[in-house]
Length: 112
Ligand SMILES: [Mg+2]
Image (cartoon, rainbow, N blue to C red):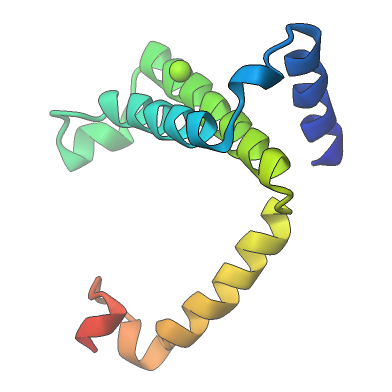
């Protein structure tokens, strides 16, 4: 993970793009790239969304890459360890969504 973060940091530095990578801009870019993932699924049925053709699958994979890169850039700028953040959030989620209340339903924890 650190190797990837450093590779992205180097890519940005070589192009003198740090000036554009404010947390605000990175958060927006992240959201835009996530929307580009969604764009491939828009208007597809649930079934169709599971059976992507080769080209669409490859394009979705690229957008996932873009999204992850911006997420890591945002974490880097804010000094957040993404693995630690995800682990902490999973602990919180486990408390919010105990198996006995959440199993088999998609209710929000506020509806339990
Ligand atoms: Mg993209």
